[in-house]
Length: 522
Image 1 (cartoon, rainbow, N blue to C red):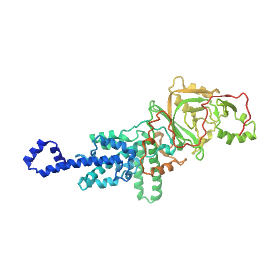
Image 2: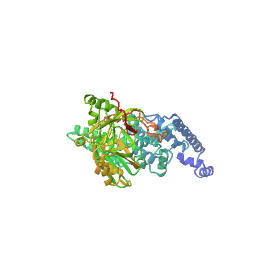
Image 3: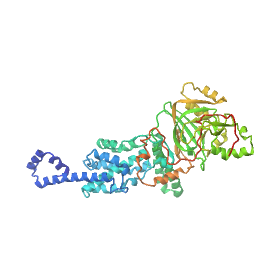
């Protein structure tokens, strides 16, 4: 007689008595049923101990402190009882969890980071009752839960804290995935295999890269028989790594609202503007910060206005390193460059360049306030856009054909017709146009990216960020929620642990011409 069969009758004494009279069930069996309930209680105690210690002896990463809340929530709802080893669906349910973990490579992850081999090895022993002590059952059941929670958390939020690598994106302000709820629902409805699609990022770029990863992994397998196996495999592995790193970075991004958005992919030297509501887009070449000393920061911000015929406020470092040496030799240098000395409201002096043909910002400046003071802008130096590698700026991003971006940004906004934009560009008057609806701007860094017409492109790791992320991912460890979710500061920009050394731009400060221009000093 099975444990569960006896248990069902034991909970209904009259049915049990009737069954004894008709089948000759012995009191020994009744005692066995009591022992079963005693064992069941012990299993619960073992589960409770694991949850309290936040440590599972079966797993390579025994401590699960950072995933303890989700794991505990699942068991508390079941009164610390078994989640997976408790009914006739045990073999199917656990088998599907193991299938999910076995396919971790499809997400660019390693199945062994989730102790797959141990779970697969132990499961037949559990089914054959060769390891079914309360401690064994509790350890295995919770190990399945912890590994599944870890995997789903990793594919949704990522495995590495973005700010630890100077990916200064705005963190989510709340959890965007209720793991206890979706896992419990999947167990109840028999839809465990659908958990992956529930947790994955919804970005089309992510799913395109996921498909590409499968293709390149298949190519790598086929290359095993090639005569030029060594070189082919090396090239394929490099592309597999780039795709996997790109997928990790996409997991860090919060969901973008529908409507317009602007993405600059730094190593691609390109800008994409996408209007999901009106099915419009723009794709432009850009020049980004120099790789060695003026890297363009990764960031997320909101574009709030555009300046036509902007002033350029010269950062102090550029003045000291580039302008002062020329001014020392030629006292008329400022005048030759259409520059002037102005007094700021804080009492300090600053050099700025007036609007005009020589202005370093060209005819347009696109502003999205951020801690780095960087922005998108036009440039009189058009020749650089013909080069394949375009990292020449001091950190801001120069845009080829910025008038196209202006039409994209101002399009559908009352009064801003193409004719008005053209007239503003041909004027010599400085003018600021505020946006009625702010546009999300993302300065991103991905060396594998699906471009226009769904073409997958690969780029050089110009800033060395791939190498840093690859090292970070080699450390198999859980990351606290605070690395991905900033619940305490929803309205404040979440700064990374360190930032690139860029000069802040003070274009937001009001300045007035100095009545008494004092001599410049270095």
